[in-house]
Amino acid sequence: MRLYSMFRNSAGWRVRIALELKGIAYEYVATSSLAPGAYQRLNPQGLMPALEIDGEIIAQSSAILELLEERYPDPPLLPQDSIERARVRSFAQVITADLHPINNTRIRKYLAGEMGQTQAAIDSWVRHWCAAALGSLEEMLDRRRQTSRFCFGDTPGWADLHLVPQLYNCRRYGCDLTPYPRLLAADAACREVEAFRRAAPESMPDFPPSEPAWFA
Image (cartoon, rainbow, N blue to C red; front, side):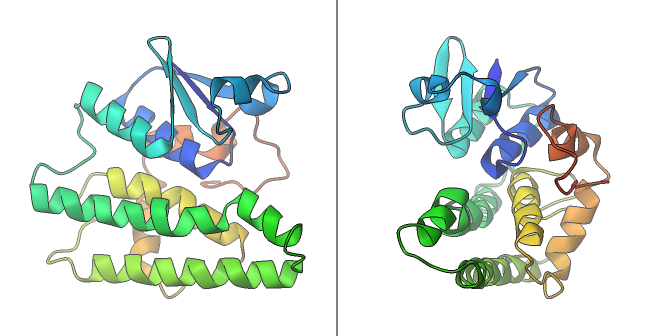
């Protein structure tokens, strides 16, 4: 099993956390180590990550995570109760469907290039949408009937592996995270879990020392 990604790619980071939580052995392949055009031939869309499994290439982190959950159900990353499972998926999709797609690298590059926006305008765009999504996520945790160490329980799972990489990005964008104590508490709890540390950007071979570390 091979995972094609890069150290800071948050979608690939989600998958790394899932692999580590489930104890699945895999080979990490940094896309920067490939010959020009090689990754595009593996994954026509060209976005990261892609998982090579049984000689097949599966793209899109959500599809990869569902595959891992189906093939390697122990330990489960989703709750057993169907309503709670839907809540966890809803939480994760605020990140994957509503937040990440509108502030990732290719969007910011388009705003700077084709749209001619200044860096200040782009930063304002990113922070606005981050705040909108984080506020919703914080409220979702606030409405839970009982508190827990992680987002949806006393063991880390589906929601946490989506949250951690996005909070890392929000810190890079200079977002104010103080209004989100529940999100920050879950992130802090994840820093104590070895699987999250093994999946962190600074644990990847392509991590440059100039980049901010997650748990250091």
